[in-house]
Structures are given as C-alpha cells and as structure tokens.
Length: 527
Image (cartoon, rainbow, N blue to C red):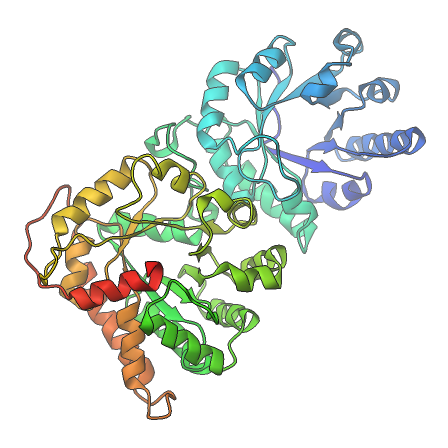
C-alpha cells in the first residue's frame, strides 16, 4: 500500500493551489461545491495541472466521473457518494479511492471496497460546520488503525499543527486540514507551519502516546515535542518532570487600573507563578464572592473592557511567551462581543485557555467546542458534588487541566481534611489524564504545600485580590506598594508549592486552615 504525505491539504478552489503548493503542500484534495459542470471541469483541470507542475498528488472530492474524464488518478468519496459511485469503473481506470468514515459500520463498508486510504473524523470539534458526529478523539485513531492494518489512515476535523502531531502520534498516517489554513491571516505561513510540524513526525507512531488508556475522553493536544505543545501542556509537563505542582494565580484584569494590572501580570512569573488566570470583569458576577466582586467593580470603574483585557494579554506576550494565560469569567461579555470574533482575538493576543463559569457542559456547542477548534483550551470546574455519573459529561470536552473546587472541612473547625483532597484528586484521575488543579482559598505557604502534596496545581485567587485591596490608598487607587504586595504573597506561596512533593497517597497533616478563606474561595465560583 503506497504511503500518503503526512500533510493533507483540502481547498475549496483551485486558485488556492497557486499560493499554497509552493509552500510545500504535496497532497491536496479539491473539494468544490455548488458549481456548474463547466466550472467544475475547469477547476479540476486547473488543479490537476498545478499539482503536476509541483509534483503533488491531487485528490478529487465527490466528482468521480469528472475525475475519470479528466484523467485524474485519485478520488475521495463520502458514505453517501458510495451509494451511486461505480467502483468498478474507478478501478478499471486505475483511479485510487479514499473513503470517509465516522463509525464502525461505515468502516466495515469502506474496508469492503479495498480503499487506498480511510479517513476518520472529526477528531476534534470543527469550526467550519457543525458535524452530525461527535468528536472522535485521539483514542479512536488507534482503534481504527488496528482494524485497517496497512491501509493509510487520514485524520480530519478540528486539527491544528499541534493537534496534527498528536493525531500522527496516535497512529494516523496523514493529518488533513481545511479551516486552520484557509481562514488563517497568512495562509502561506500557516501552510509552512503545517509542513514543518507534520513532516517532523513519523506516521504510524504507537497507538497510545504516553500510555494513555483509550477510554479517557480526549484532553486536547497530546504531549509532543516542545514546538508541538500548547503552553499549558508544556508547563505542566515541565513541572511534572520537576516533581512539583503548579502555582496558578488569579488576578482581575484592570484592577485597580490597567497600567498597574499590567505591572502585576509581569511580576507574577518572576515571583513564582506558573500559570496566570486573568479575570474578565463583568457587571453581574453572580458566582463571585465579595473580594472578586469588588475587584471587578474597581476594574470596570477604571474602564476595563474585553478589548482592553485582550490588549493586556497582548502586551504581556510581547515580554513573556512562555507563561500560560487563562481568561476566567462569564459568557455574557463574550456573547455580546461575538463568540467567533472573541475567540479569534483571544488566540491572536496569546490567550491559552478559557474558564467560563456559567456555561455547563450541555452548552458545549455554544463556546467550548468552537474554542477548542480555534486552538484554545477549555478548562472545566469540578466539585465534590460532581459525582462519577456526572464526571464523564463534564470532562468530555475539557482540556488543559481540571479545576477542582472542594471543601471537606468539619463544621466549626479550622481544619481541612487534606486526606479528602488526596482521595478527590485520585477519583478525578480515574476519569481523566488531565492535570488536576485544586482551589481552596489558600493564604499561606503552608496551606499551598499541603495541597501541592496531592494535586498537579494549586489555585490562589481571593488571597491575592485581598492583598491588592489592602495596598490601595483611601481613594481605592494603586499605591507604590500595590505591585510589591501581590508579588510578595506569590513568592511566599511559591515557596510552599516548591517545597512539596506530589504524594502517592494521603498525607497526615493538621495544618491550620481558615474556614473564612475557604468559603471565600468557594463563593467566588459557586455562591
């Protein structure tokens, strides 16, 4: 069976080929819809000649009769196309055949035709159109490859260069792309990125990269070389190698003003923060407690908007290209701006992920799936009431990491059951390979260390916002102590996190813990 190029480009007009073939594309499908036959013939003939001139393989989508008439030697057919296609005629004219599949029944039908490749999709949620089939996930690639053996396997749907590397590592022989290139700001440059990413990977890698069990929901891009990895993946992988948890710090964008907020953002990694959660202020923060509400109001009074929040990220990225940034907030401002526009702007600014507290998993089509298709992680919240029956739905499209907000303290006691944290993290890890970051309203290095024994990350928010608030002058304006106050607390918390090792089982501890701080942290998410 002949090999396919690992980079498989789909275009909707032959004119694209004049621009993209010189960038290194060598396997191209022409998918032209809703044209008159005369124009279809012109499109196919033009694509055929351009591919021949560049030494590329052309695959004609759907129009198998025209492919035969115009001496093309490869067609791609969907399942509905198979109902009317003359497979015998294709074989008689030595036209090779690729077939789309989405479920086991379709795969059996395709294999009965002895195809020259099998396509599986969508692997990830798609941005171009809503598919009738749910995302297959990386695990399905391995399953398909085991069943088809030496027949080349093409992965398609929601892929980016990073995700393409994961698909190839999972067992695909070729990664197919449409939207990520055709809708890119610079399609030529994006094509070169795809060429470099896919040809650096050997097709037919082991089915389960990093030993991931196939029953896990797909967590987004699998770990690959640094150039193929999201910032969030890279950060957690690096910290895993160090044997410690991440310190995840929350601050409100624009609090107490935009310039001070920018200086605070810059100070966080230097003080020891590993991931930054940046709050998007909103006029009606129903899930926030008093501290975060006050921070949001200060930011709004300072003129902070979604656009200015993204500008903060863009400025930060000009100086720090490594620290992951997760935007946290509510759906309303995103909806008003327009989800597609917001996602494009967020990705361009350098945002890595989103936490949107008022969108449940049942509404994934609204923002979660488009966000993942745009290359942004979508982090979900889990609590002690998220039981084993509910968790699979919550985790289905979650990526980046899981944010676990939990309280298992005894009423009236100033203690937290840290063994319960260990058990909760272990329970979550039975359902997902994603890192688990735990939020408890941590205030001290000792608190952070106690949680970091078990979790992959320690989330701190209210304590940092309170430290900022205490540094303000009587007019609620920044003072010369504001940035330093936040940075000093982060440095102390980082000392605690770095001093702890992730434990395999429950640790015995009686570290004192403030119920007021604990309820404050929970209130900002679930009050």
